[in-house]
Image 1: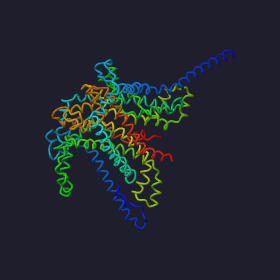
Image 2: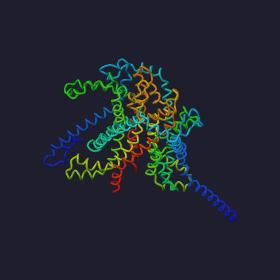
Image 3: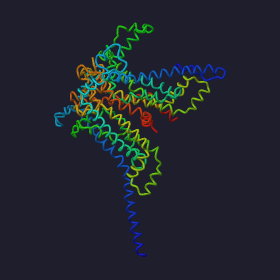
Image 4: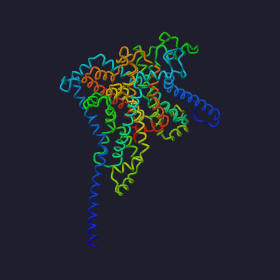
Length: 293
Length: 338
């Protein structure tokens, strides 16, 4: 920030000099910020580079800075140590089911809180907000015990079922619905004899589609990356989601880093691609969910 | 004709009334039905577990032996914890990491957000998106990448440090610390916490940039324009306009950091796991309370102690949040209302 200190208010007599001064400080600032951005994405680049190199070039000085030609070999090695595509499928399955159910139940509840006056509404919504603050860790032991009691250990539903109507999603959808839909619209639909669920399904849901898309993206990303829940529930190689599968590679002696990096690259790539096309929506959604009102 | 039409009218009215009754009924109960999934799930997977874990924290229990093996032990689990050296070590590591990986995130994010909303507004989106990218990726995946980056002999970080140290114009800077090179980031106790902290800062500072950018865009442009007319420098504008008005957002973002960092698990768990080490690396230097909790509950299968630990952690988080509220939140929130 200090570099900006000189950029004072322009006084007409020294306007020209000041303008170049400003331009220089802006250029310096831009270079700094771009450098930081490159530093931030460097680990992803590094991951891609290593995923195309074999062990002996990974462990060399100077390090390889450009793609190598061992991609094929690393892919074989990865397939040898992991049921990789099975793990990817588990992750996709859990993330998709979780996203669909979350979007449905949260938009429904968000609609309920945003568009109706009913007894206890404020209390119940306050309850939803307070529950947001409970740390996940507090519940991890009894969560595991309940799943065990239900006989759901090693099943995907243990992961997506408990969170499908979650406080964050309800909060997000309530805010969105309240700002996007005029109440009069619902009244005119009622006069036409539509049931409340029908109003939700054919009037509200299409109108809150942008909010739904944001919630879907956030849910998918969170579920894809979730580690602690699956770690205590999914205990066998064939039920592992992708983060668990990657972690299991750490136990192997003489870790084949080329193969591990290829695995992480394949696990990270779908999200990076999704993010590339939807970054505005993801970022704005998070902001909307965190900046109240 | 006349009679017929009268009955027709009457039955039509009754039908309408009946339809109206059903309509009113479903209208009245619809909202409760719509919000009920959350409350049902929360009762099963939220309230019940919470209450049960209070109960559990006063028991000695290995779940493999069934519910009947539960044995009431009073405060024993808590007493044991407070006499356990590993617990204190984990608590110290957790607080250290929460501070060292938490504070820089905000010191970095606030100026960055200020820069991308003012001087560099044109580049706001691409820059924020780049900073934000680590946040959306799997912690396990990036921790594995960082494990290679931190490699002692051939890790790219150490090779970069070596190159800088050998570069003549900078050699003087490294003359005092040469003997410490190459840094054994994940192999020596003293470097583990900084290594974890770097990963945490890298992963989450972009999230804070996003929050602060949102907070800054709510500050009316006229404030800055008025200050500029009065001849305030950029630094003065930042210090006297931006910071005070950003206070509610700082409060919010720091609260999220506190809650998240005190539960730190994924990053140290994966990063310090080298050839099967599950206790946070040499000297347990990277063992956080969350990791210790996991180990106690799921590897030593001592559910009672683990439950007690989760409550201690919950109280620590609550206390930290409360202190933070007293220090920063109250004044910040008052200002907003005033």
